[in-house]
Image 1 (tube, rainbow, N blue to C red):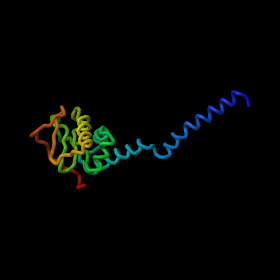
Image 2: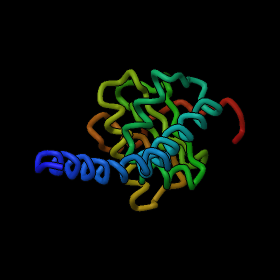
Image 3: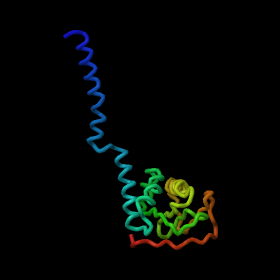
Image 4: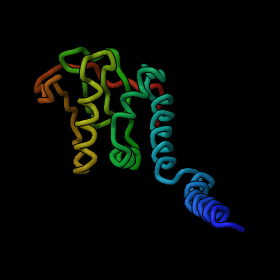
Length: 156
């Protein structure tokens, strides 16, 4: 064997060794990314059972805007995230405390980002209030605002 052959074989060996951990992770299912995907999928599936205005186009972006760690906390508490087309642009995001539901109007500008901010903050602090909380597009609470009562497809 000449010097070039040895270098080529050594290079191939190193490439194979470097590829083994990535291949092992793919065989195990992708680790954290796969676990996060399962959390998002479970939240979307729950929304499909509970939320009257659910559709993949409306629900997916709102749920996926929330960090997976916050969504885990929301799911552990058995809360739901529901798009609600009845909410207007002046009050695009609502927390229905008694029902344990975050609702947002997916057609309202900035509602998805506001939902992610508020749901993430509540999950981080584990401070979900019992009463209904309504937010303006600016992120400030809309005290005294009237919003439709939450209506679900079925009892969870």
